[in-house]
Length: 123
Image (cartoon, rainbow, N blue to C red):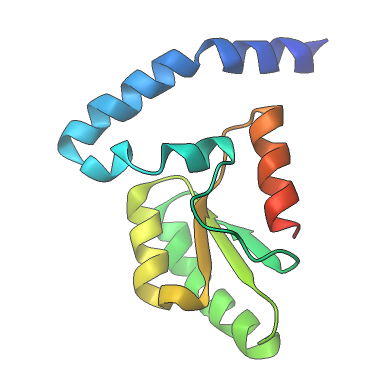
């Protein structure tokens, strides 16, 4: 019952989230890009079947860089997906690894978005 209520509430507040992203995008234009990723829609195909790591903040992203490097060294044939929630986290991942690691935004906690994401990444 609580899960249903939680999910319904998340769907209901989506317009507020869009407004917040749009407003934040006035100062940081990257917030107005890649909205589809937050709902499990990706412009480019993702490499499935690899290792996935998530970092929320820039600090967590920086702390994860040595781990990602070690994983790339230990498992060179597996794709590595690093998810973040912010454009600054995305920038850190892309500047540290370029095309060697795939980065996407972790979708919002909506069943449809998460199912699309997990079906594409298949960690």
